[in-house]
Amino acid sequence: MDQKWKTLEQLEALLADRKKADPASSYVAKLYAKGDKKIAQKVGEEAVETAMAVAADDNNELIKESADLLFHLMVLLEARDLGLADVAEELARREGLSGLTEKANRP
Image (cartoon, rainbow, N blue to C red; front, side, top):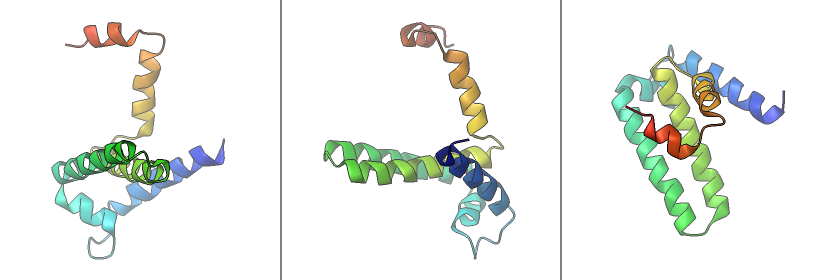
């Protein structure tokens, strides 16, 4: 497995472990203690910052903000007992579908 993907797997394991950590000693544990709605709000903030990096035409900032966005999205997924594998399964399900067709088939 490519080291980049292994990094994401290791991060998922760390995020799962932090669910049991003391919120006073861990940023991630503190996020979990605030609940998934607050984590979702943080994901939204990071998404806006990612979009702002694009608007500023700053690829270095785009990479940094994208990392923040992905990190917080992974925290949110873990808070709901989900992970990147669940997202990958959904993307695999959509493979070969036209984006227009996929959207039209949504309830």
